[in-house]
Image 1 (cartoon, rainbow, N blue to C red):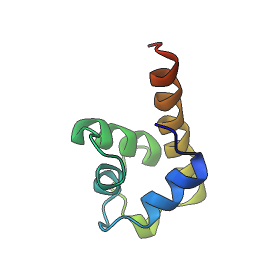
Image 2: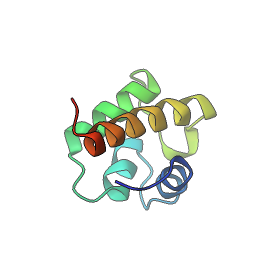
Image 3: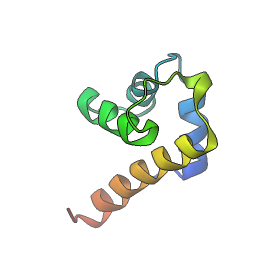
Image 4: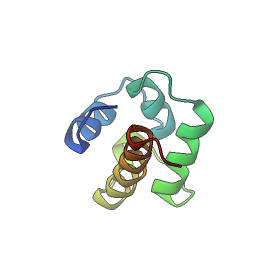
Length: 78
């Protein structure tokens, strides 16, 4: 919960899987597969995407989604 956006980006890109939602699951301990798929869906606008196909726009949307969840959890808001 304390990772910076840069740390999140590096961890996702170095994950041992190629499919984006699975990279998210492997990166964040305890992350729900359903939530990982929702984050990937939001970031890619519904397109199946591998780690190698992540554009800067996709990464920006993904990091926005993850950091929003992080902030909500840390501030205990919905």
